[in-house]
Image 1 (cartoon, helix red, strand yellow):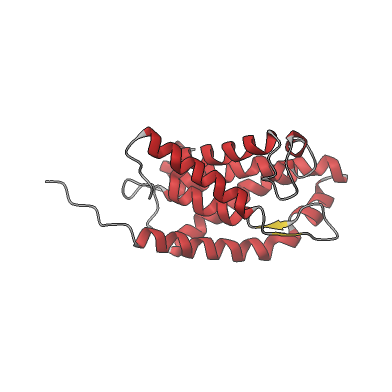
Image 2 (cartoon, one colour):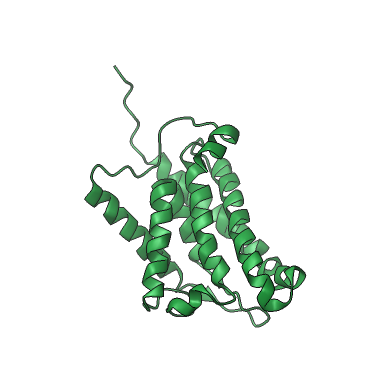
Length: 198
């Protein structure tokens, strides 16, 4: 992922935003990222015509990946999935390992791909809202690629999966992406300026 990002999205300066100085600090940020994702899952709007609800999780993944970078963003998502697999009610519909294999599991696993893509690009893009939104768009594409391919066998094919798992969410996710880009740009704007090397 880093190699592809370096080819198509040249790095401008070292990032991510959060650069913990110790392993304990890094662990704390990963724990905080997984907690943010669990809280965002509480924001849930079920839709009567699809098993996939509108949630706050995509917004949380976009922001935490932009802040933590690819490696720690992925770690935070994997930790979140581990909490859910152990039975903690951190997913939008509850908890338990069964959620990692059911019809909507692809979207949970897709969060890993989203965090990897967004984190890798956020580490090397000028911290502006438009550039973040472009990175987030690619992250959303990675999420839906995994989610739709997983959902397809459960609903009778890709066409039906698109009807249930993509089209109803295009506008909500576009708005969440715009909001997340604004938040990420604001966070980076508050970062102390780096001192020039002597």
